[in-house]
Image (cartoon, rainbow, N blue to C red; front, side, top):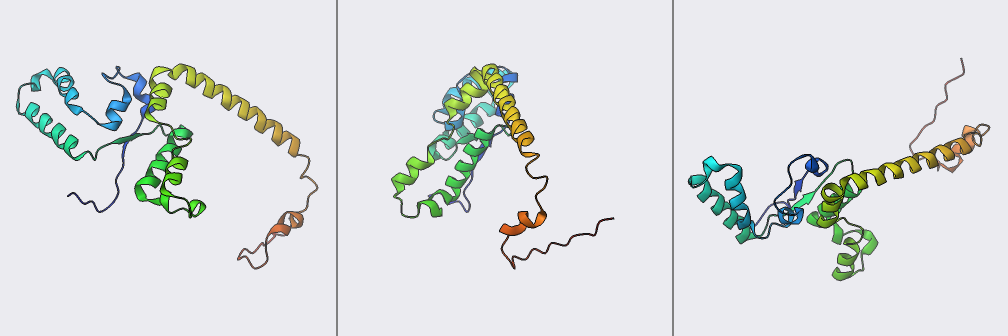
Length: 191
């Protein structure tokens, strides 16, 4: 039996830069789910032919066998500037730490209800493959258009509200703050 002190999570970062390199021999899910790594050994020998038929070939085979026997290795993907990718990683971290089963929002839920709720809205490896490898340019264009639309909406909201708060007093803004909250407001005299 293998016992680990802490939960661990392996993360493949910089997925957004993967399209700048030569294409991978397999789809991304092959690398993240780590099922049958023996298919990688010939590709390792192609990358470094001077190491083929040496002690490294035997070492690679032994490591592949060890990883497959325990079945503990898997990877999550991360593109730091992508909000969906970051949220997907945060959900995986919560699952690894057990937080997914201890949140207050689903205290009376069954394990199956929690599992179904956790799987919704999370990017899986095929989504990451499509976003960052197969159709990167199309997704980048769509994302740029979404950002422009969001900036226009933010601009419209800021210009529409600019005149509303001009004559509002600070006391009116602070009226919702409960008394004795530990915050003391001190106003400096005008110069």
